[in-house]
Structures are given as structure tokens and as C-alpha cells.
Image (cartoon, rainbow, N blue to C red; front, top):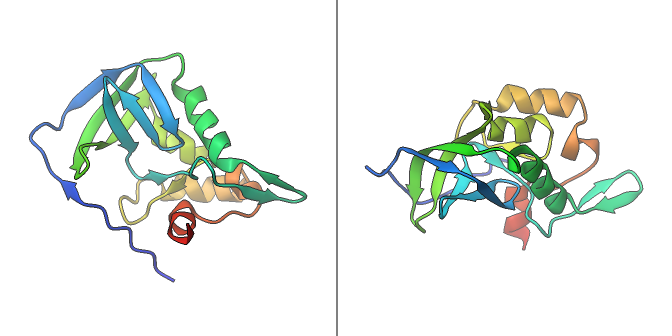
Length: 150
């Protein structure tokens, strides 16, 4: 089955960098300098989404948010805005201490690579899956499918 994510994206002359302390909204969304930013190339479980580990149901959406919070809590974030979405938010590649935050979320298994947006994190996701990190420890519905079911 092929999933197609459709998102109204408007290129903008305002693209550039924004930096500062990040406020974490969920596992793939932050706010920096008053601007809402979706991390480029990844999709994380929604806050209310749960996953199944062998004998437990876990709040994987909240855990994903906490994982992102751990990455950005004590360090300024620098985001290279790529695209402005129709709702005014941005899609951006963000770094904390020089590390790509989106790649780190995929590496730890708390976010999935969006192959339709970028191939940049596909190998990282494969490694996380092989290592049974984060979401890959159990069963889960990909976030884009979970949203569609709601």
C-alpha cells in the first residue's frame, strides 16, 4: 500500500534561519522564536497515540515528545526554514549543538522518516528498526495511518 501525504507548501522568500530556545509541542513539532516548526523529513506519533509492546500499551506519542524535549531542552536550536506551509508554520531542518534533531529522533526510533519528503533519513530508520529502538521495540501504527483512522 502506498501512502501519499499531501501538504500545501508555499515556497517563501522569508526562508532562512531562526534560532533560540525551543518549546516542544510534540515529537516532530517545536516552536522557536514564536514560529511553529515541523521538523523536515520526519513524522512522530501524535500525543494521544499509543503503541503495543509485548505485554503493555505504552503512550508512544508522549514518549516521542519527551525524547524531543531531551534533545533540545538545554541547548539553543538553529532551524533552517525550508518551506512555509499554508497555515503559516514552517518545515525546517533544525540542529541542537550541531546535531540534526530530526535525524536523532529517527535514530532513537521515536520518529519515522517520511520517504516522500526526503530520502535523507531512510538509512537511519533502517538502523533504528534493526536495533529495535523506540517504536521498533513493539507494534505501532505509522502516525500518518493513525491520523487517517481518527
